[in-house]
Image 1 (tube, rainbow, N blue to C red):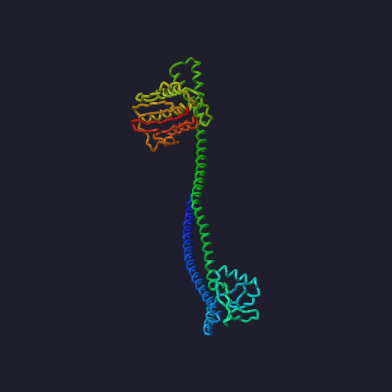
Image 2: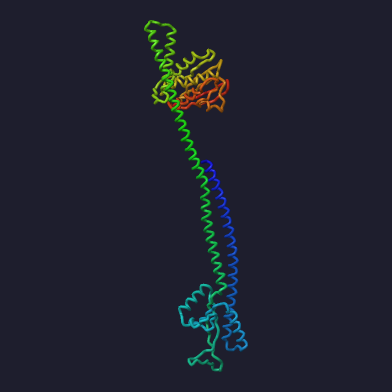
Length: 447
């Protein structure tokens, strides 16, 4: 599962890199299209200027050819100019009344221009959308109603001022380049839009590795949690089963011993040996009771703490070396301190800690049990001047099976941790350790 997550992250990362490279390629393509667009725009502008100039020359020739005073040679030149300049451009000349002049160029069917007004209007509309019209003003002979040229009193030809407008359409070449330019702009805009969507998608994908990592971590932790607690549950069942079986095995010979004690008492046998045997049977009964409570629902009682500590310390003190000094340090304000305690189990914890301190001291030394009370907690510190605990083992000493002794199962402190945490909702840990000076194991309980 972890390998799959790593592979997915790698492929996603590679995809994002490729996406960024593609995005840069798109940017370069768009830039190239924009550069080409600038060139095309310049070509279009130059062609428009040239075509405008052609139409202006053509208009000037039309203006001059209508002058009756020009010679035939001049008229022939102007006709040649009109023919050459308008060869590629469609132009329409309208007089002041909006009638089409015969000088309109490049139309195979000029009669349609004259007869079909809608066709003319549509052409004029197209031409206006492309170019502004050119106005020309010239004089022509006045024609009377008999279609004759009118003369002045001096015999000269009477002239009238004529105003015409020339509308013209772009050449086919210019239209083709203009279409190419428009297509290029549309293509560039489409690429920009696609690139923006692609970039947005790529940016969103940047979060995909984080999502995959979190999901993979969640799945991994879930699997680990399930495995850990199933193992712990199995381990707990084993502990409880062993404890119950131990209590059962102790109970059988203990019942027999108690029966023999009662028999000896009925016979009137009273001496120190019988008293000691009775103490040991009481002790065995207490041990069996402790084991039987492992795995059972706790039944704490509100009791004073000092008597329990004193009795347990006295019991251990009688069985320890006389070279080891035991001290119980409780301030006057804490002498009557009470808390909810499972007596059998709690005294077992104290015994285990004190026994470990005795094993650590080995010969001469001191063990102190200090009790402090805060607003929320009761703190018990077990202090000895034994060989100490390595800092790396502060957690390990509470693990089942861990022991620094040649003989031992490593169960004492493990059971103590379970009793404190599960039955008393407290904490037990190594506070500090300075070899042969001071090692402190602390228990924190809710007051």
